[in-house]
Image 1: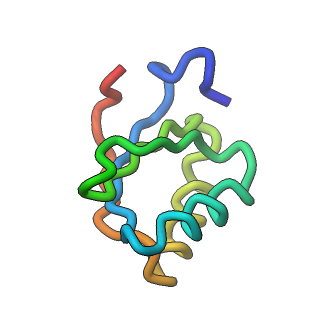
Image 2: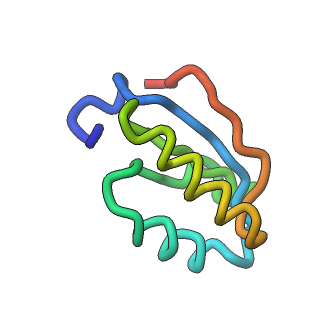
Length: 82
């Protein structure tokens, strides 16, 4: 996991549908070790994700599923801001 060196992780951002934030967080945490999430801008529902390189494929599968369920949208891969 990236907690000690999050600046070495892959970095993503997405808009989580505000009314589903609690459901999203609970569902995402069910999939252990695929990434660390935190709120970047609560008023806009923007979350950031720090993802270990070896978990990127699994992370994208899980996020794709959660997106198909209407919990988030607009996932983008960015340069790690840390």
